[in-house]
Image: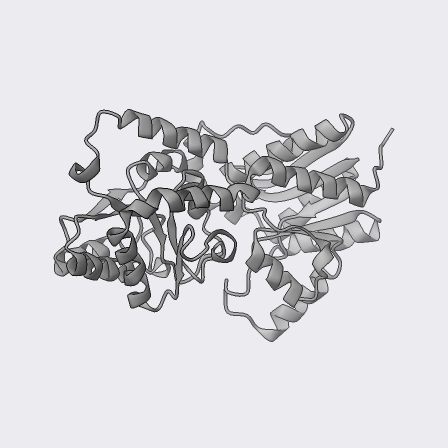
Length: 389
């Protein structure tokens, strides 16, 4: 059996972890099975900094079609290169990563004509973007040509079902994976290094936000809610921002005007593998975004055993957050809801450890190894155990 996965960019650390696990699972089932990941380009413009990331191990068979930015590769170039590698490799199963790239969509139709089974990996949900009737109709036509689907989580699966995909065709509903072993290792190491640092009442507890400082992240609402929460309770909690972006100066100004400058810390931006060190200094993760296809930082916090507060418009909320169990969800436009949840943790610090342990249970189904195993089994089922000679 030969499987060809088409992916946008090589420099995507969690995808590399997933592809490595898929390759391992396939080889364990049958050493003669083959995987090839066709990476269209090296990076997207927003991920160019990953060229200096030495922590990512590309431990799977891949080929980079264009050694430049994805943004610089034209549709015609993508189409020609993808058709070429498809015909050279002659896969039994083709896995495209979305229906947003017409080069991949055309390849999918060609694969169907050639009798090759097709899988679509989808991260989209109904809340991602404004939808139009004609675009939804086009998507319905596209998804009808696939044999199986891999989804990030509940919201992306429900969106596919709204497009007419049969429930049993969605073979994986928990594909939002991270490198949970590395994240937890780095977190534990950071915690251990804090052994000599004062703890308990001497160290203020922290809410933490990790991500871009941008308008869609709804961070002004977070600052206002935090200000009211600490004013109401007189608490010595802090709010930590890990990340950078265009709204930083405006957010810092709001902090000053709100009178909480001594309680809010802007740490700046850091590469993904340093984030666990900041989580280790924190107690509760908050993701207040207006729109978020998923929110992998929630996975990261949860594998570190942290409670989370997540807006309902984040794709991960339906899968990973249970109100009152491991955290809370809230309407991103309702500041008072967020304030209430912040106050809850301030007034009930004894529940942080208990709720963090529940986070570990809830995120367990999203472990990269088992998810990759589900994907490998799907490929074999579609290929009918076909073996080339």
